[in-house]
Length: 235
Length: 235
DNA sequence: CCTTATTATTTGTACTACATAATTACCTTA
DNA sequence: TAAGGTAATTATGTAGTACAAATAATAAGG
Image (cartoon, rainbow over all chains, first blue to last red; front, top):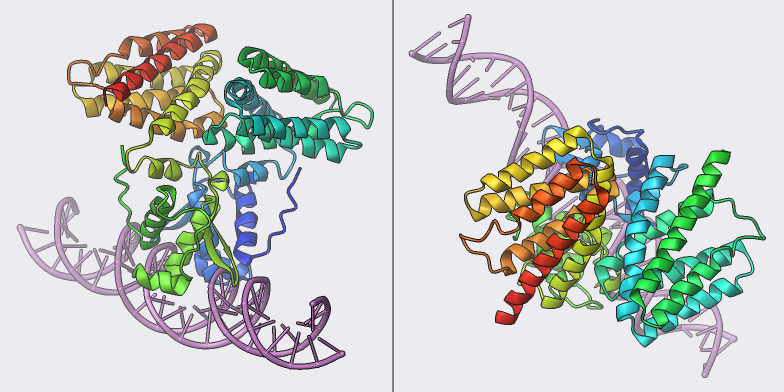
């Protein structure tokens, strides 16, 4: 789940280091950061690199800089919670149960609607991509292959809505699926459990049946929700 | 609609200048930007300020920099379409009809679900805030006051879901409402047209009736959709 | 012709210097 | 003493220079 994310450049490292610290709560909202000169020295980077990182974190709503006052961690209200990085940082450590709950709720809202829209507006080519992803799921020999194909399926569905705003929600779906992969009690024998659900969605989209697609997707998500619940109770 | 956004700092100006150019299509995807030194000179800023801006645009998925190769505008697929700035830049000039359509579709997905969730989980305090916003709408004497209160109502509803991921979608709702305010044929006499819709939503949330709230919101959005349609046909 | 070394160019990082804004403290004055 | 304005202080903001690192293009060598 945690992206390896070959962080090449220095300022990218700084972004992720500070970002993770803030999102994890180790740097609490309201807390002031050391002034740039000190912080740069402490992190062994130049003020230049540090500032470039801080501008990005500022754009994500995590921090706020003012002259003389310094830089402070902003309240979570202002965080760009849908940002892929912010979501990833929240899952860097084991995500809290209530955050998983919120992710599932988002899937319940996004994906059935997306399935319906895809059934209405998908092109032949988009259907092709979706079908290919499904085939890869069916053919997957191990968990990793399944995971990759599963993500491809859900992303292809979002693309098939032909609404780029919808597509941008993939970061949420991706994170939700990621936590599911970690939390659900899957084994080598049952990891293809949800394949029939995916087939129903695919078929409904192929046949351009929005409501059928929606219901199939509702079923799929509600199923994965209960899978997580079962696992949580175990733990 | 277009945020005045008192762009104080230089690099913020650069962010918005370049951002708008890219999102409007004046700088097409695939197109390479001049190298930093030249671009900085051309924009009358230092390379320092330019780079800080470029890092932010890069974080929004609009551009991509590589050593030796230079900086290129990325394909729209990679754009962070839900980013508040990106949305605002898309509406800087008159938004296209199909973009408005996509915004409305997002409202249709987000807001009914949010209304239902708010009815389920809102706190007394959140209800208070929502009611206050409603009162302000009812009391508004002009279009500006109405607009402000309307936005506050929709934001309060998202907050009442107690799901911060939902709250972050406010940028989408805000943009959608903004285009609606511009495109709908409102006059001094009828701008409170949707007040009863809002009352139904508020009451359902107060009474904790998720499905009633959802349906009321479905009605409100579908109504505003048809209002926009009517106006588009005129033009 | 293919492979490998060299070169040139562009972004990446560091450092210095100064500008600007905002807070704080002080100092003047009624 | 209290009010109010003013100057000192200190953080971020901007500019500019120099060099490092990466890589596309090119030249050298087999």
